[in-house]
Length: 223
Image (cartoon, rainbow, N blue to C red; front, side):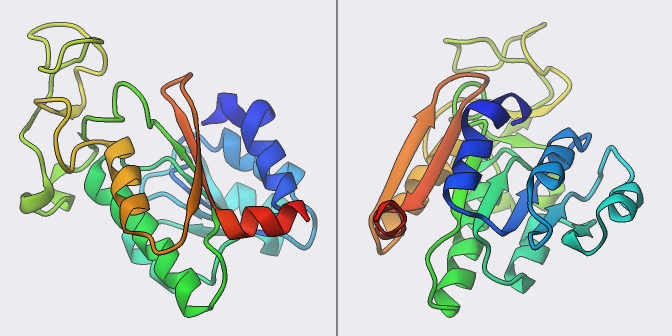
């Protein structure tokens, strides 16, 4: 998600006047530092990552009470949070995880009678837009888990390739496409079920970024 900062993420967060943000999946923490350096003193950032590749205590020391780190999976944390103004979703790239992250964010907002957070989701195009990736396969209920192998992928090939390809070390779904398979499929299923109209914008570069916002909230912000 880091390459989208200047062209999309920072402008969207500023336009939404986002003061409470959740970042799901922080990897090495570069994007987290951009968020904290840009947000005002009254802002609050929640970071969710079960296996961070950075030192959360260093961030706490630098940014104090504005920074809250959760060493856990998103499904355990999101229901306990206050409604967010924005959510950056770049964690486990599979249908089950992303679909339920969106549902949980929506349920928290609904209980508080506020609009959905602006949602920014990475990896909505190839290779994981229509194919599941499992960082920890056993964490996904079997009925929602596609058959997978540790083999790579190539554009235009629905099946995994025998040798080489992209990300052969990862647990990738054997077949691309179909129901309940991939990040973009999760987004589309969520949109189809959500009660209010949503505006969707797709940026089909660097594995894809999709932005979701409620039409009503967008109209109010433009007034």
